[in-house]
Length: 187
Image 1 (spheres, rainbow, N blue to C red):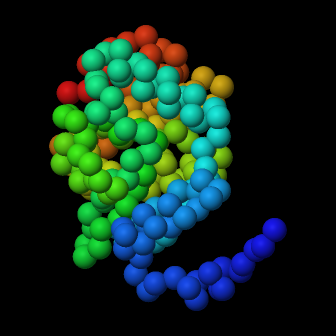
Image 2: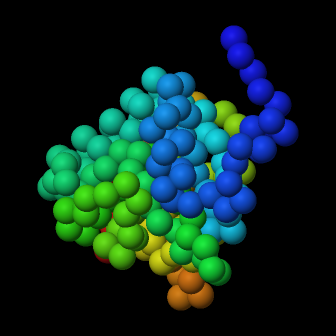
């Protein structure tokens, strides 16, 4: 196995990583890592999702589809543009739900985005619970749900409040959430 130091890798990185750079990095990674940047230009390398992660995402997708959301409105691991001060970040939420069929492209504008879901993986807690919560709220995404990988697979449901920050309005085991209608939670 070949390994490079952070210094050696850094020598080959551009000073500012663009969304085109991210797309190329994601396409070239044979190990399934996800490359994302914050609106401030901070690069994050996320490990590939495991099978439990995929099962949780599939359960949510089937639940949304059974409630009438089309396959063109529910996307798994689609890149979204996160605007910032002078830069644009790129995040890849585990699920995104769109008001109308999602546009084509690698990095989608968030204008018609209704919901993003992050499924917490080992090592991604701070990113999913704090950093992405702040970024998605600043981008104006109406709903942000986080599914924790505890015994109950606790889902924390958040919506934008009047101050532009997310307010948690429900917290329940995923099994309970899946017994409700998405219409109960999305406006």
